[in-house]
Amino acid sequence: MIKEKRKEQKEKKITQIVLEYGRTILISIVIACIFTTILTINARNEMIKNLYVNVEERQKIDEMVAKQLVNQADLSENLATKKYSICMNVGHIYETAKDYKNAQIAYELAISKAKQGIYTPYAKLTTVLIAQEKFKEAEQVIKSVPDVKNKDLIKFKTRSYIEMGDKYYSIGKFLSAAKNYEKAKFYYDRFSKRDKKVVESIQERIVNSYIETAGIMVKNGYNSDAVRFLKKAEQYKPNDFHIKYKLAIIYADYDPVISVEYFEQLLSKMPQEIDYSTYNKALMKAATIEDLSGNPTQAKYYRYKIHSVDLFVNQKVVYRNDLEVFLDAFNIRKTLFKYHLKGKFRLKNVSSNDIMKMSADFVLKQGNTIKESYTVECANRKKPLLSNGSETDEIEVRFGKNILTKRELALYTIDIYVYKDPKYKTLLGSFSVPEKSFNHLKK
Image 1: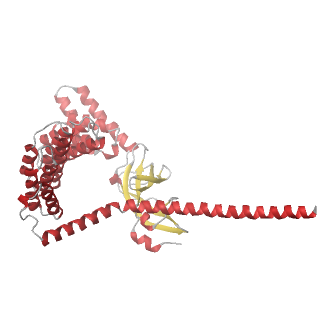
Image 2 (image 1 turned 45 degrees about the horizontal axis):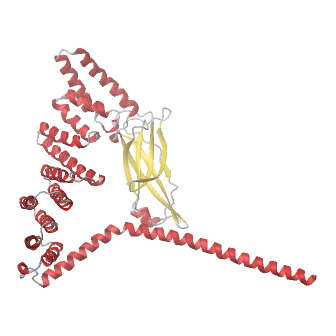
Image 3 (image 1 turned 90 degrees about the vertical axis):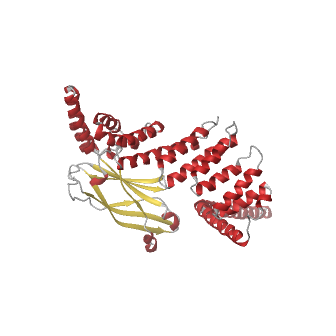
């Protein structure tokens, strides 16, 4: 009996030891998995961050190697007698070495040897002609290929016109850029299934080109032409605030009634971005025009609007130029393997009006992604921010976000938004973490 009990106790002890040992192994495995996962995620993030850098480095290496090949031998020797594929390869080497003149010769020979329906040599030739700013020749190459219902042909012409537009844009010829982007759109619209991102990209290029063209027209005093190009941009982005605002400003000089119509559309969207002095001048001019036209009721409406807009601005709007922001300090505190970020700021009222109510959002961002937001009341009726120089007390902003590496710290920014009404927030400033902060980490 005693032997049996001892045997049972011995078996229990062995079982307990096995269980303890197994639990220890399991905990070790879990901890190892967690650390492995963290390291894997960090490694992946680092790889993504360095991706574009690696692409640029590879391009530089390719260019260097291509130049060495070109210097060592005359690749164009007897090229006219060579096959299509050799002409293409030689053209590619010259293009990579940025020797566009010889690349042009090689691609022209490739076209003469290419089979019908092959558009690659045409595309490559167009690219090197554009790089040399030989726009008329590039246009001739594109037009030399007859339009047929073929996906490859549509891709070739779409890409070529985009390339031509990009080159024109880069040298400041914005109207020519817009015309080429319009041609790219014409061809891309022939696809039955279009990629939404490509469509948006082409439209964005067209809009930007017309906006830049309008800006040049305004500088030279051609307001009617500026309006014409902005109207073209508006067709692609009918609800775009900035296009409508530019039209409102231009119309304020020579057609204030239309200017007021545009301003009224924008009043409820982004009032903090509107120049109310220009708006008020347009309202006064519009009132005078209606008086002269025998419409006293409409003239009265415009004058009443001036008063109501002033009230709205005083109650709801903070302008970027009303305030100055001062960064007193960035403190980075390190605990174990994590960094914590703290900033100290002051806001100063440099406007001619007292601010009786205002709040500020301090937004921690990584790229375009919001990580954390910290809200502070900066002024109220008991403690207003007085005009012409009154400052807030020092605002200490502590973020709870755990940051793992110094390199990651450099990717963060703090955007400061101020507002009287949360609907109408004004971006006052954006601050990145100064690199010198990394060398004075507090443990």
